[in-house]
Image 1 (cartoon, one colour):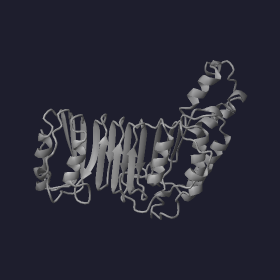
Image 2 (tube, helix red, strand yellow):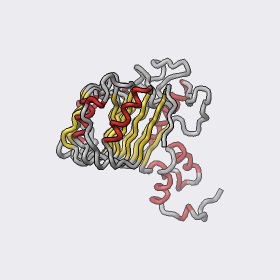
Image 3 (spheres, helix red, strand yellow):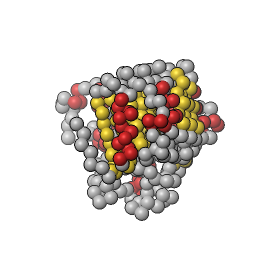
Image 4 (cartoon, one colour):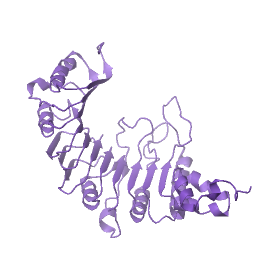
Amino acid sequence: MKLDNDGINRLPDDILVAILSFLSPIEAARTSVLSSRWINLWKHTSSLKFDAYLGRAVDTTANRKKLSEMERGKFVNRVNFVLQSHEAVTLNKFIIRYDISGSDTRGYNDYTLGVDEVTQWLEYASAKKVTILELNFSPKYDESLSYPGLTCAFPHEFLTWSTSVDFKPLKALTLKFIDVNGGAIEFFLRNCPLLEELIVHESKELSNVEVCGSSLVLKRLEICYCRNLKLVRISAPNLVSLTVQELEELILENVPMLVELSLPWGFGEISGQKLCDAISCCNLQLEVLTLKVLQNPKKGIELCEFPEMPRLKKLVVGYRAMNEESVDLLPYLISAAPYIHEFGLNVINSSLKLVLF
C-alpha cells in the first residue's frame, strides 16, 4: 500500500505526532506498520493514556467490565513495553486506569498491583516532567461505592530515598484507590509549585491532612471516601473548589477565592456546628454548596446558627436515606440562601413521596 501521495503523509511530522497523541498508546503504536516514516512517530506523542477497559464489552449482569488474570497481566506488560519504547523527552499527560477490584468473586488479593509497578510509573512520570498525572485503580462503573481493603500500596519511601524525583512541572494529580498518607500529600504540595488540581480517593492511610501555604496555587481539591480521615485543615488563597467526604472536622482559614464547596454531614460525619463553622469562613463568597447527608443528624441544623450565603446560586442536598425529619431540615438550608437560582435534591433511598416544583 503506497501512502507517499496521500494527504496525511504530506503533513509535517510534528502535526502527525500531535494527531497520534489523541489515540491510545496501543492504537498509536499500530500505525508503525503503515510505512517506514511511521515506524517511530508514535514514540514521540505528548500524552500516554492507558485504560484497561477501552473497547471491552460491558457485563450488564454485574454492571461492570471483567478482566481475567491473564488480561490484567498483559495490560501491565503492554504499559511497561510502551514506556520502554517511548522516546519523548517530556509528557503532557500520563494516565493509567486499571481496575484492581478482582474477579467476579472479588478475591481482592489476587489482582492487586504491586508497589514495584507503582514505583516504576511514578519514576517514569518524574523523568518525563509530566504535567497531568493520573493513577486511577478504581472499580469500573461503581467508583463511589465502598470496597473495604481494596487499595494499592503507595511507595512512600520512593519520595524520600530517590534523589532524582522531580515533579516541579506537575499541574494536576489524581490518585484513586492508592494508600497515600499525609506525608505524601505534603510532599506533592511542597515540591509541585505549579499544582492546581489534587484529587485523592479511597486511601486508608489518610487521617490528618494539611493543605496550607501562602504560595500554593491550588485551585481544586478533592478528598473522598478515605474512611479513616479525621481532620482536614486548609489555608490556600487560590482555592476555588473543595470537595471532602467522610471526615469529622474541616478547618478553613484562608480561602478568599473559594466559591464551590461540597461537604458531608450527619451521623458519623462532620457535626452541624462544625459544618456551620466551616461554611462561615467562606459564606459571603460561596456560589455552589453541596451537602451529602448519610443519615439524619440527631441534632438538627436548626440548633446551629447557619450562616447566610448572599451569593449562593446553587444548593444541592443529597440523602442516602430520607424521612420526615430529613424534610424538616430543608427550610433551614434554603432560607440561608435568599438569592438561590437552582436547588437540587438527590435521594438514594426514601420512604417519602416528594413533589418538587
